[in-house]
Amino acid sequence: MLEVESIHTYYGLSHILFDVSLSVPAGQIVCLLGRNGAGKSTTMRSIMGLTPPRRGTIKFKGESITGKKPYQLARQGIGYVPDDRRVFADLTVGDNLEISERKTEGDVTWTKDSVYDFFPALRHIDSRKAGFLSGGEQQMLTVARALMTNPDFLLLDEPTEGLAPMIIEVLEE
Image 1 (spheres, rainbow, N blue to C red):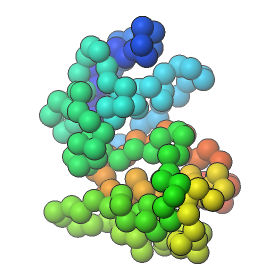
Image 2: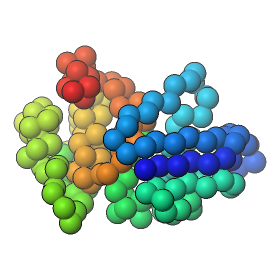
Image 3: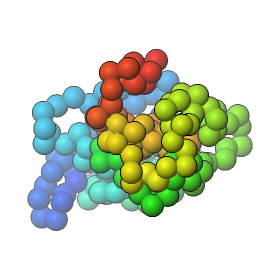
């Protein structure tokens, strides 16, 4: 489903990723492990087009996505939960979810109601502005927003950061 082949990514003049390759077949869960600064987040940012690689290729479902913009990748079915949350602070929880919704041609797995069933705490704060949420609530909202895109493929960068152990168990299920 996802093929990353020999990518090299830079931040300015700093060469960060050196010849990174990985393959993720459909239906599989793959975890990138490494110490701080090893390039895990940069790899995900490269896949999502936020920090495009200067060399190498990235393919999704057999099609090259190298250099595509993040919104194009979301439309193709790639969801992304960044490590820094990035909620729309001036919008309510409900509005954050609604603007993230992607209609698909097939069955829609994730709706606002199903996300609220998955994260019941969000239902109770639907009308609260996201900027006033705790770190854990913002993290739940970030994961929920990614689910609302009804992705075929989901990238999660430190998805349990700031979450209570009980919520982490829900994510594991």
